[in-house]
Length: 381
Length: 170
Image: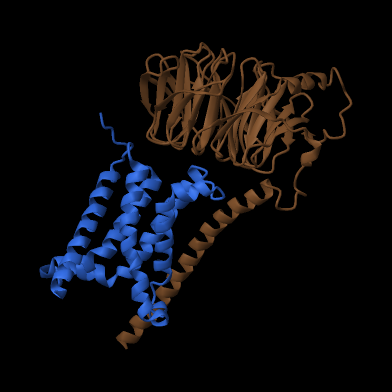
């Protein structure tokens, strides 16, 4: 009797175990399949009916330089204010200084013990700040590469931003907090709560306003003050997936956000209103950047493409499609002549975008109100 | 200066997976290396619930991997991913196979092959040592040294067991 009971129990336990294992295997399979599916669609092996714009309709932007990162995924790039130096960070935790003109590697530092997902250069070109999965934020001298300070974040650092005056550092990551630090003293000034992981951070170019995008698809805009507690200005809701990138326009009026829902949204910062939604990628958006004149927006996506958009009209101006893997980062040169993009294909591509930027101005509604046939993918809201 | 961080949730889950895995190995190793304690309470309990503990090891490892895939946007369509995370992926495959066959039905169906298949568990020992060392070097959390000591001690005892068995055979 007893042995029968224990046999029955063993059978039901075995069935339960198999059920749990089946669910788990299904979960792993789904993740892998999603990745493979994305690759097929990005390479055009799958039907392209989802593409909002056929590849032939968009002018392709050729890369003028390709910087080889020796097989290591690139997660972040930034250009120095005078535009001669490009700094990159990637999976191996190394920080690399490149000569933008020649594409030669100038310096390599093992900056972190884990991947560097975000970095920023101060407006005066003196300071480089890096954030890593090793839970550290490091402040470096951009000229010499010497470490000035290390800040402990608590968990993976996924996003870093420097205020325009170079006094504050904002960092966000998987500890569900937006942390504001004093760059001079290294002191933690504020810890602002987030609903979930913070994926992207940006400072307003003219004030002490900071915006972050979170895993839940929410964007929050906070006003910082030296004397008072930080004040929540806006909560922007509209994205259906994680907000992987946020950037303020140079005039500070518009905030661009890129999301895992494959769309880019432009927001009026003061009113918290959605201005425009842009659809032209077929995979999550990982990076957004405004050109220095604010007329052009560059977006990098997991679909391996970099798109250039006319901010006024919302039309695609061109597409850099030379990367073979997800594009994690895009950055304009300070003169707006070149665009740098970094990818998990372990390359940084530099592309001349000056002509396209000129076209953006020419195509703005004030100059030219009739859009051409190929330009039909914005969703004015 | 060495600074140790608090472990985030995914590291805790990884630690629990490793601990459960070590517990599945402990009875068979201690039976040979410490025969005096063969009938002690703990080895007996561990031996009795070995399969269940193995399934827990798999579940903890699964959630550990799932959290990290989400947290770090790991792209499985990239070949380099498989190489970078090869120890973790290989261990996960082994754990999945072992968990899926940890039932009486599989024992009956696979017969002698079941024992052969479950010898894969010893391979995971080396893979896990490599995995913890490779992924946590330079940024240890409080559970990293415990994990390293546990897995290295288990490996050392496993070799001692092999040596004892070899000596007994001769």
